[in-house]
Image 1: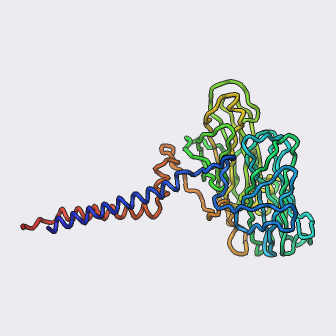
Image 2 (image 1 turned 180 degrees about the horizontal axis):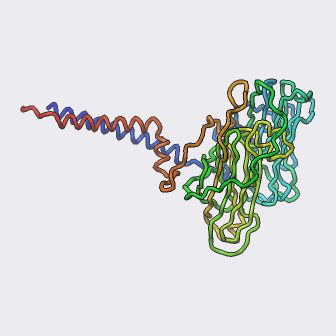
Image 3 (image 1 turned 90 degrees about the horizontal axis):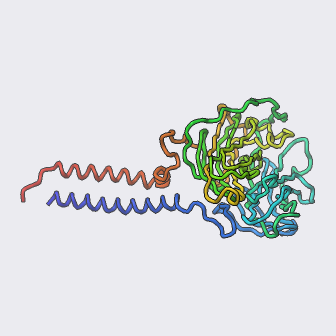
Length: 435
């Protein structure tokens, strides 16, 4: 009878484990299932926590963008979209905007967005812009404006309300209709001691070694918020014409980033000009560099020229790409494939390989007042990406994602399973008493 009760408890425990496994599976499915909730009119994945706001036509009545939050809005051709931010006197501030045109939008070389930061008197504090450039096809582009506290400047230093104006530029050839906006307001504490105000001008100019290891699988995100984490090495993905995939790479202070995007061999032989576009953004979503190349179905690659190591004093450089490399943290790669590839070489997904290198050892962060800034695009805490799986394993396999998604539930399941096995073994080891 005792043995039967023991078996009954073991069966009950197993039933509970099955229920726990089902719940854990549901959690994993929620984490790894519909990761890309497309809008009907856009393949870009907006931050799921973004708050919708309607821009004002003037600074009066403009919606407030709180620091550390994400917002969604829109801007039409020939219109002014105003937003308000409250800036303090204890650090720098950044406001970024991701412009998201619809996939069927026509754009030209000079089309894009321009941001203007203004004080309460309408004086311009900073401007930033992003354009589609030579790859004249619609894709997400981002720009930012900033307010830095300096002792040598008197304007735009006071604490209080400021205004961010977002406008579309170009427009002669672009299709009418609104573009979506994803907006972020982030802050950077000031330093406890004065830093150098001269940007470095010398660094390693030879191309960093391109990782030649076997590529591991990864699934890029469709927005900054769900960008796939990458460490150094080679990664393989698939990319459809007209789509953009996002990846994030942690780059520490003093480190130098390099990246190459390679299109694999495909059928056909006709040439598509500027078919693949590779963009790099800093942790505050400021543009760093944009490179592209054509494709005719034979292997093709595009790479960044050697970039400056990340340094606080880079912000004082007169070179845009150098000045943008001012933060340690996640940097974002955006890879786009021209929709013309489908028309010329055929529809379907194309193989793309990313080779990422991070040169040098990370140095300590500057002496900020308080914690170093965290510019994570999805509100998470920035942390180093674990080393990818060795070449013989699929670093992006479903099995590994399920284990990660299970979290504490998976650990509980494992402990419970071991407990049941121990219970059953002990019951089997006990002698059966005669009835």
